[in-house]
Image 1 (tube, one colour):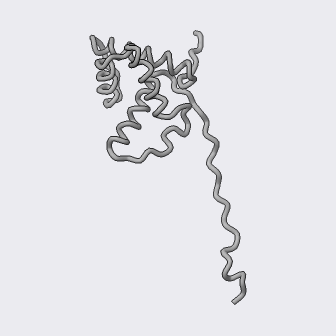
Image 2: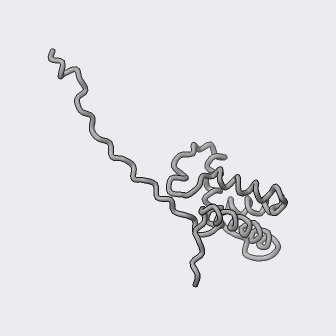
Image 3: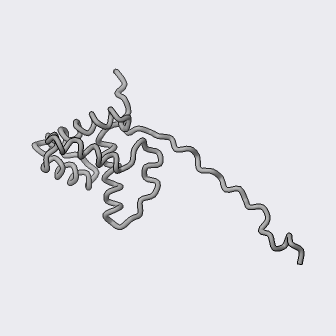
Amino acid sequence: MPASCLSPGPRPVEPALPPAVERPFVNAEEAWFWFMSWRLMVEDGGTPGYEGRDRPCTPFDMLACLRRLVKPGRLTRRHLQVLTGYGRRFEAPAHGPLARLWEEGMAGLEELLRAKGIVGRKVPA
């Protein structure tokens, strides 16, 4: 039997994945809902994959930002309960004291995420 029959021959060239385009989030709320979708997937037993491929951060960057807000007391346990509860529903509270806690949490996140380039720069009107 000729040796060429035993060799696998040239392999087909697999197309390369396009380079990741890091697209910043529009605001902290969009980043939070993206983070919550990752968290819910992990809680449901899913395996994280490419969820950060086109984003300028990983879910762990979001956790680090939360820690930076919780440690000095800028976010309280109640803030986290509201952010998590409404984040699971992928909606913000409409009004009332829960909306105030949501807005305070989003303002703190927005400040950190914007400084890190995770949220895009505001365009002057």
